[in-house]
Length: 180
Image (tube, rainbow, N blue to C red; front, side, top):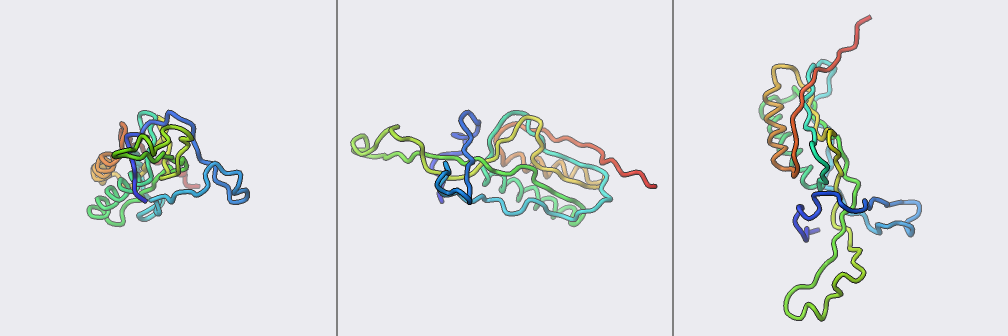
């Protein structure tokens, strides 16, 4: 399914969210056919309780991210982590693309004004899905040991270059449970 318009046209969520897709009542749906998400993997690495540091990519302003940009960012960060610290990290994607993006196809070329309906019945067809991310919400989370903090920050910088909007990298200690 090809993208018709660039992602900057739906970067900021300034309209109604369309996410209603029900398997029980398919006729009552606003969305007849749900577009597939590009995301398949949400967690990678080795899950362990021995990690002592969490590095997160946190959103600074309200933004809407398409599933294909989240997948590109996940792959870029994951490849960098796997190349530099294989098996010494736990990498998770914290958001899920629920919001359905619709686009109205417009006729172009000679005579398009006689063929096209303009903005009459301009509800559009679903073309992709996106995640609405609020300020302060983490998008990616990497759990590592303290010596690998610079590698995790570089991986998140690579992921940041694939996403629209403004972000910051935050680091915090993981509280260990008290031994009894």
